[in-house]
Each structure stands twice: as C-alpha cells, then as structure tokens.
Length: 116
Image (tube, rainbow, N blue to C red):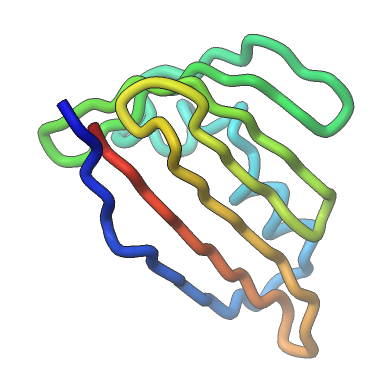
C-alpha cells in the first residue's frame, strides 16, 4: 500500500508561561503515556544518546492506532524535532520551536504527516 501525504500544517500558540516550562511539558515524550493516555497508550524509549532518542510509540487517532519508531532530537529549550523512521507514518516529520516573547512563549508546530 502506498503513502497518503496529508497537507503540511502549521500551528502557532502563544502560551503565558516561561519557555522552559512549556518545553518541559510539550516536548516530554517520555511522559506522553501518562499525560495523554487517550492518544498514547504505549511509549517505549529504546535508546538515548546526548540529545537524540529512539522511541517506539503507539499513537491513537480516532479509531486508528498507529505504531511507529521515531527519532526525537531536542535542543533545550529552543526546539524538538520528531522524525518517523518506521511504521504506519514512516517519513513524517514534526518540528516544534519555542520562542521566548514578552508575553511568555510562542510555540510553533509544523507537521508533515505521511500515512501508509
């Protein structure tokens, strides 16, 4: 079966909190199973080296559950990138940037999702 390329989407959100605090919550993939169990029934960190982690993820979207191997690259607290290496969304990339602004933090998420 081929891949279904979805439109690339960009989401921007202003959060009235310090950048480090926003990053600590939003980019904390190790805790997704606890903070968002309705979406992440299973997270298994396979390896961590410096700022790169390889993670097995089960992501539930509606009635579909995606199984993926991902690479998380973090630059604390500026950015978090997720590359899907294998599985149901192979080739997808999600980029998060955390910009410090006067009001708190501007979070920008760019998602380029590919589904099998």
